[in-house]
Length: 450
Image (cartoon, rainbow, N blue to C red):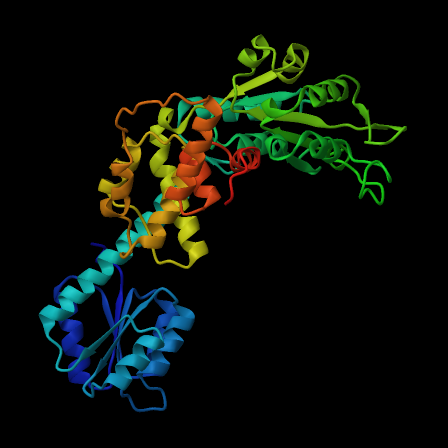
């Protein structure tokens, strides 16, 4: 316990004021006293009081509520305890509404005062330690929004710094949800192109025709509905970086078109006759084994080598379990703030559950799990019970594979995932271990309503 945190007692009754101060000093605390609100506020301007005991009824034009509000104006973190001999429901409600942490009635019990102060200071100590730890972890483990202390990830982050200002193409391999786009952004924003555009295209989310228009733009009249010229992502990314996510899903025709752009740095808009020249760095990402796709004739070998100038392979979250507590704490802080929920941490037992899970959906799945736990949490801290459903979703029993085509198996898996997640595509994609855009593409392919 940090006994050096000062306490202020404010009461116009000298006997009451000095008695309470004496009790607290016996417990080892440093205590100041004030006989009115004005004096209390002046003292608060000088000393950073952890706790202020303030009498509700005081003469001199400033009562306890006004004194509390003025103290909070100069010391927002001070815990104010309102004391009164005239306890009513209305005064209690008013005091708590205006910011009082507690409300106690005279005559005060010394033992109750000691326990109250001890409880408040333990909470302040915990909050202070958490704030210090959070700042330390942020400085030590956060790089361009990538939170890690995993040695392999540290090597990857060091590589992003080394290659940041090069024009060489980068190919990022990694399972869905591992943070491929974050690594691409780390490369872009660490180099000389940082002030230029960073443009993202999800290759799996669009059909061949739409993706071609998206990448290269089109001229007026190129197709029905093309009422004017439109610049594509290559032009919009001129001088900067174009991030092509799920590059393994593009058609053979687009593979040929992309190869030409990488070789010559120029292209034609759809329906155009004039070449457009650009200076764009390409960073591509995939959750497929492109070398295997090349062997099976589904991906051009020459394009693969053009893309694979600098290769980055991201580890799955199950291969960097030491990052789970860091990431979980980050998601709790961010999501609880976004949702307006008063959740301020994760209990050790709950962390053990998270660390033990295999995370087939990787960091994206962890984020979704934390969000669900925060929404259903009934306490100020996530505990093991908030993740009990995750434990039940552990190793699955062996199941018999029906004698049906592979596509039908995939369709059934998608339908089942959507039913489990009540139609939530984001959660369903995480449970399936695929990108949301990939799931949308499969929903269209299998004509699954959602």
